[in-house]
Amino acid sequence: MGLLVESIKNELHNLASKGTFPRASYKAGLVSYEESDPATPSTIRIRERSSTFDLPIHNRQTGRREKTLWLFDLIVDFNQEVTSEPFEEELAKSPRVPADAEQNQITLELQSVSYEHPPAAGGSSRITFSVQATIGAL
Image: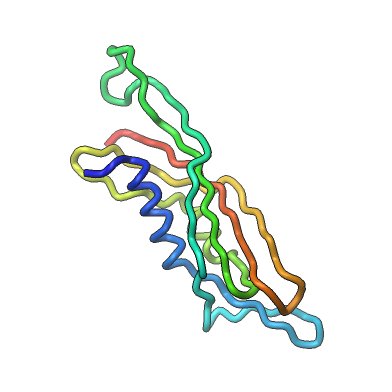
């Protein structure tokens, strides 16, 4: 079994690599998004921003504290302009990190999204998803 933070980062990476990101196209100055041929991320990075400690889920009498919540930035770069709306809808469903016999269930919750778009019809784009990972009982 790996570290919890490793499991969370791996799951975020897997979700982003399998996510749907329709490409933008421009005709007569109007944008449309092509869902039939989605873009593939050029780079996926996950940064742990902070964590919160609380009493253990299973044995609250020990007085020992453990991590119960993390905040991550999932940074996804593209070589063209895209929309992340379908991927945002998937993250909004609060996916769970698969648990094993030794690991508590972890729920991922989308907190916010920021966009860095190129000028119309050119350049690369970056989308940063702020995700909270919360530990729960098995």
